[in-house]
Length: 215
Image 1 (tube, rainbow, N blue to C red):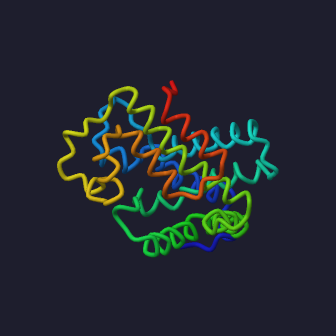
Image 2: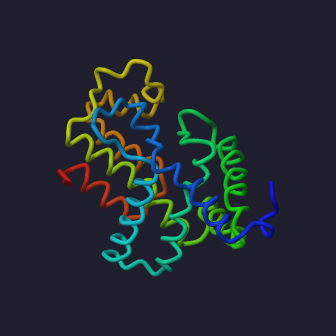
Image 3: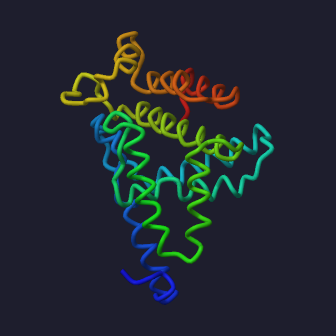
C-alpha cells in the first residue's frame, strides 16, 4: 500500500469515502437477529445520523455544558471500524476482542487521511468514555438504539414467538425481562437503564419512551 503522503489528495478523499460508504448498506445486526420485518431496516450509517440528531436534542433541552461540535464529530466516526469488521454485537463477541479488532480497523481506515491521527484520537476518546463529551456521546449511542427499537415495536415489526435461533434471547438478562411480560422495546429500554451509565436525563427520556408512544 502506498504511504499516505505519496497519494494525491483526490485518492485519499475517495479511498476514505468509499470505505465509510459501506456503512450505508450495512444493516444493523441486532435488527437481523430479531427478524425485524420491514421493507426498509436501519443501516449503520442511518444509526450514526440518528445518534447525532439525538445528541443535538439532548444538549438543547437539558443544557449540558459540553462541546456539542466535538460530540457530533465523535459520533460521526464512532462506527467507522464496522466498515471493516462488520456490526458485531455484545452477544456475538467479547468486549476485549471487539475492541482490539475495531481499533485496528479504525487505525487502518483513518490511516489514509493526513489528519487521521487526530481523528483517531477523537475516536479513542469516545471509546474510553472518560471525558464529559465522550460519556454524553456514549449515552446517546446506547439510547438511540433503544428508541429505534421502540419505533419498530410500535409498527409491529417484531414477533417474539418467531425467534428461532436468536442467540440474544439466551442472554440471562434479556430472557428475564421478557419473561416478566415486557414487550420487545420495553425490555430493551429497561435493559439499557440497568446496564448503561445513564445520567438522570437519559434515564428520564428512556422511562418516558417506555410509558408512551413516541411516534
